[in-house]
Image 1: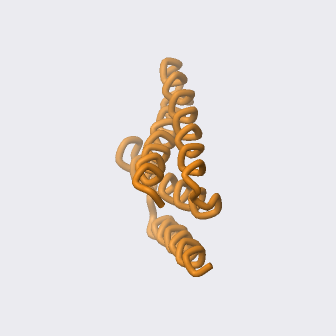
Image 2: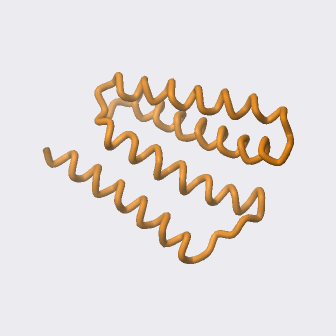
Image 3: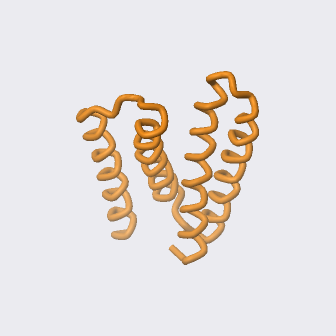
Amino acid sequence: MSALAITALIGAIVSEVAGTISLRRASSGEKRWWFGVGIGYLLAFAMLVVVLGQGAALGVVYGIWAAAGVAITAILDRLLFREPLTGIMSLGIILIVGGVLLIELGAQGT
């Protein structure tokens, strides 16, 4: 992946997490957070288009984006909203990240 693709992928992950955290805030009745939801998801998908336009494989990009989003959101959810993050949930995050790494390794072998 090119430097532009990696940068855009990181931006897509950060934007998606920001949109999701905003969604959590908006769901509790704070309507001003809906702006953050829309902007976060719009930027995330726009940046994914950039990554894919750089020639990155969709399966790899989507796997990294989704796994990082799940892991970071779960951790922030615990820190910001005191939601549970159990050992089983942590194991699930580790398995997701491991699965994405295997997809990446498999894609490099082709």
